[in-house]
Image (tube, rainbow, N blue to C red; front, side, top):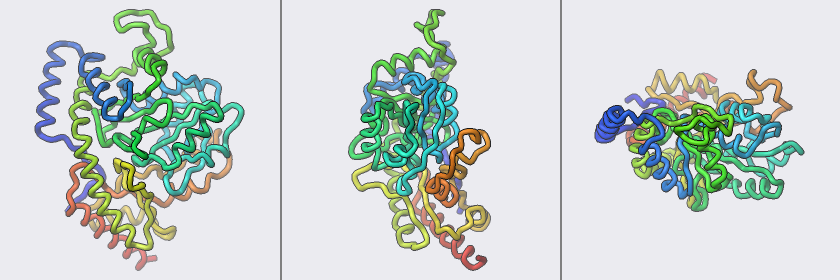
Length: 376
């Protein structure tokens, strides 16, 4: 049996619907900012109990627009060091200075304590990242800290479609949230992103920024320094159709995750982040922490070559403060993030995964770990 690292799931019926809608879009010639974009925005807002959703062409664009809307130009912005580089790039392109912070070892995410350690008089915003789809248990305490200090809390929810913490969806903890629809995400539009907010001023700013800062779609009066951040109608209808599958995708992923949980918890050499019983983790990534003696490169090779199991990409294997592009921003060590980045793996988890596939992954993982012990 082969279990790939990622698998993008579109049913035959969904493919047919998208194809028919694409033919219609091409026939009408309304290729951008049309009815499918509005319908996708409305459906995504409903799915996350949010007043407003604004579709854009990437999750990175969504985050940059939010940061521009809260005006981080010339200010410090705190973010976790274990995030995708685009989180920091968005800060820089919005005119801010990324400040890397350590994370809670139980959630891989910022906490009020780790953020407090790096706040300065120049801090304007904090970006919390819901790593792997898990909304951190300490997010409310982090919001309270931000409110007390007059800081904007922004959610990088690129991984967190449909995730909930204590009955509240991703996107309901900060002033706004940025979602990604990159192909590997739980919901995809091929390429694209979405801004979710309850703030009508941020919504209005986002509508301006995504379309070259123009006061109106058909005019040429520019009131912001925007960019070509629009989502095409073809991407919008793809995302709209896929979004309808979110409840069933979440159910499949939760079932597979429960199967993984039982096996991981029975193995003293493995740990995992834990989702509180009342919360919803979409399990965009299923994260496992092997003991410190396990060589990740060898484990990955053994699983692939001997068992046909591809591990999903790490989140993330190299912390940003140790990457060359951010060398000028590095300021000391961030030990928790450095440790979890170096050690963790992500087991494959798909929206149509079978129990047999999950059991094969677990059998392969057990065999690969035994092989390491024998050779180590």
